[in-house]
Image (cartoon, rainbow, N blue to C red; front, side):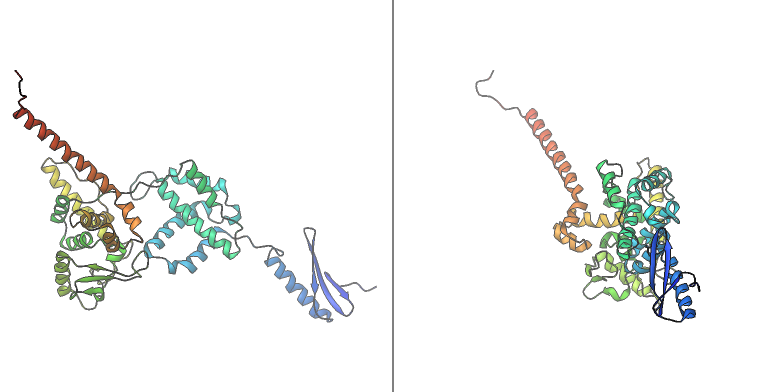
Length: 387
């Protein structure tokens, strides 16, 4: 009796392939009566089944998901967000390099959190803060959400993990920063800054542009006739174009810079090579810190207290405070100037000013109470019939 070729069965005039794997049967028609062609199609089908893990969804690793995320979505992100995700992915790779997405669970997320808390921040040399870990986990959550759409993951384990940590307050958000410069601090910093830094720092204080906006604007965005600056939508955080007025000090600085500029450079603030400052460029940060250090040294010599740490974003906050306090702008006007997504965002960022104003009001009222008390002591009221 003639035996059939391995994994092939003849049904009528047509050959069929048949395999068994883990107790499961896989079968199908070779759609031919030629045994040689049937063998070839059998072998190709076997290769396909092996490649697809015998019909199951292939296990994908975190590396694969992160790579696809970068290729497909980085182009849609703002430079600052792209930088943040790049840093977070590097941190996540320390724990999840080569790990299958389905293997990332609450236990592994907890291990990641504990390890990160033991690490030291490269910038501050202090232990990694909870808000930084939250940003790393948020990045992982975005990747998992996208992986679900790709069919690479059946769920997102990060969302319930973050919810649980929120419930126990184990990963608190950072406190909103309230630092801004008063007029004396600004003057001291500018006195000790380099000429190039003076222009960039002054511009930041008077316009309130974000870092990416300031170092991305070009000369074509300057309207000297109407004295306003166009902030293109590709530079803004909410992808909405806006215009910022040139106050007299900024107008003077820009006119000077425009007269000195080289035509080959389109950027208002550029490197010595005429190129745009990148998001990772240390110029603006180092220029500001150098000026602050020199100002503090001068303060020490006079026996005065050092000023607090100053970050570049504090200059934008200073602009908002000046608009509210000095120029008496309405909150809605400040919101439009700074390019916030809504007036609620502005109110949240500058709520601390209301507390400061209340403190000042209390001080003024206390001063009036003391003054009235002193007047009464100096001029006691004569009660008729007394004595």
